[in-house]
Length: 103
Image 1 (spheres, rainbow, N blue to C red):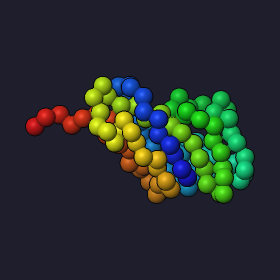
Image 2: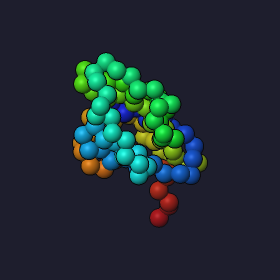
Image 3: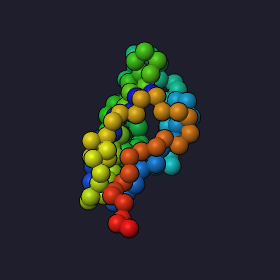
């Protein structure tokens, strides 16, 4: 699975959890296990406000882009996130939503 993150200013926070080809996005499970290699699933066919692209399976690997909400002030790793390449099953760590409050 290859997940590209597209930052967007929002007070909402995103959670991700992976279990094989099932990606739980914001608490809603989406099973992409039936998507064959070389196939494309249009974004419009998936009821998910965080999805920002079609979903494609290439070489057995799912490729998709998700919106990454962030606070008004966010660190560089959130504003310019690295793609998530083959995240492990379980909760998927995301960049911080905003800056940590001063001590």
